[in-house]
Structure formats: C-alpha cells, structure tokens
Amino acid sequence: MKNFVRLIALFAAFVLLAGCAQNVQQPPQPSAPPQVSISIVSAPSTAAAGSQINVSWKVASSKPASTMHTAIHYGYASVASDPAPSKYPNNSAILKGDLPGDFTASISAGSSGTLYYRAHVIVNDKSYWTDEKTISVTEPLNVTELQKGLDSMDQTVEESINDLGQVQ
Image 1 (cartoon, rainbow, N blue to C red):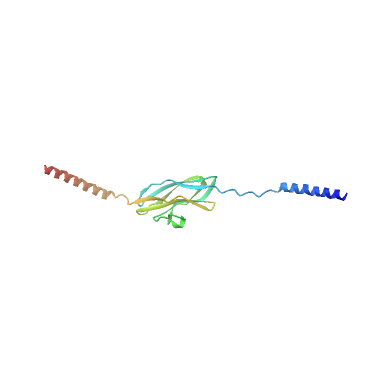
Image 2 (cartoon, rainbow, N blue to C red):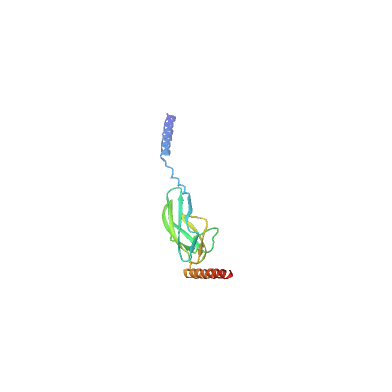
C-alpha cells in the first residue's frame, strides 16, 4: 500500500509539474531591427556661389520606423571614408519623420569651388550615409561684365568686316 501511495504521489507531482511547464511563457524575442538604406534623389551638379541648393533624398526601411535625425552634411573638403557629422563643417536643417520617407532640405553654396555632401539618417542609434557627392559651385554671372564682353565682341566683328571691305 505504501508503494501505491508513493506511485499516486509521484503521478500527481508529474501532472502538476507538466501543467506548470505548459503555463510558463517564454520571454518575447527581440524583433530584428529594420533594414535601412539612404539615397540621393535629386540635387544639381552646379550652382552659383551665394545660392541656396535644394537636395532631396529617400530613406528606405524594411519595416515602419522613425528618425529624429536626417540631414545633408556638407563642406568644401572631401570626407572620402568613415563619415561623421563632426567631419563636415555644415549641415542642413535636421529633419525627423516616419520611415520609409522622402526628405528635402536646402544647403548654402558659400564660395566657388567643389562642395562635397552626403545625406545621413540615424535609426535606432545607428548611422546610415549615402556615398559622397559633389556640386561645382561657380561665381555668379556678372551681367555688367558679360555685356562689356559682348560689346567688345561686336566692335571686333564690326572692325573685321570693315577690314575685309578695305581689302577688296
């Protein structure tokens, strides 16, 4: 009879443990972060010094996300590798928004030269950058100087025609 009671107790313990094991919830598995990419959509290849330049970019994401920082970082020196916001002396307005998303911001063309820029976004504390692009910044067209040049050309052409008439 003792063996029978032990067998019943063992069976009850087994059922109790089996029932408890079924009710134990597994901790939620962390979800994988979204796959993010960033690309320039439109920007001019040239601009006049002193002008504002509009740059548009797209941030793609494999699942809905948001960002508190996306911007254009730029300067007159190339940052060919290992980009960081601190390596570019200027940036556009810092934008925020839902991803995937399209963004546009203005940057300033200060002086003439080659302006280097990249789009940048931070998602879940990770930075994503486009490849570095360039804009050729030229001095603005001086209409007065252009008119002087055209007047000089007109005078040269007129003198050449007169010289041809005298040769005959």
